[in-house]
Length: 250
View 1 (cartoon, rainbow, N blue to C red):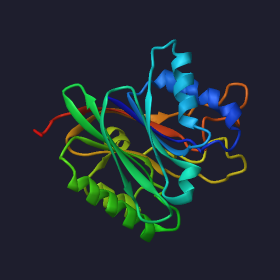
View 2 (tube, one colour):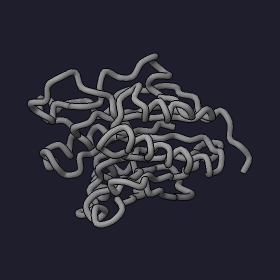
View 3 (cartoon, rainbow, N blue to C red):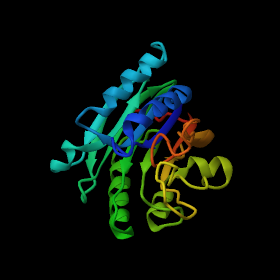
């Protein structure tokens, strides 16, 4: 199964121009499942993406979206979502406790059995806050059925940080597992003109030990050929191919 992740940057920063670029790349990548962060709830950004992907693919790619708004009034504006073109058999969500942040779990039926796809956007404000959110997420995962599991998202934490080291105690990075290193960066992209420096890795596809990684790479990393400052988002995404090596009995 191909799984991807992308922080959409909601509808800010030239969305009317960059949305066509995003759709073209999503059609070309054609993941079975993609986790989206900074998803605009009203107007319905996911609905527009799903409709345009189906139209551009000639009906060949049909996604359904499982959305989850942030807690409180922030959820009227923004949230996270999972687009899936494989059957969804269950959904759940978790309040991460601070900054209105949430995580979601979408259980999909892949060839051979069920896989839990977790999607999260951890908070800003320091490692103490994020490690608390990550621990809450790990505890939630531990309470659920022991299925092959994938965690995707913008974790707002660099490789080697306390947050990522905590998560790596139970999960592993698909990109690091496949290549022996993380990508050079997932932020910024050319969309953020004027940003200087080497950039950072903040976005991940993490898997548990019931999944094997066949491939992993950056995604949504193509700038518009006619406008080098136009990218699909202010983050690059990731895509990985995973295969379950075991489906526990339920």
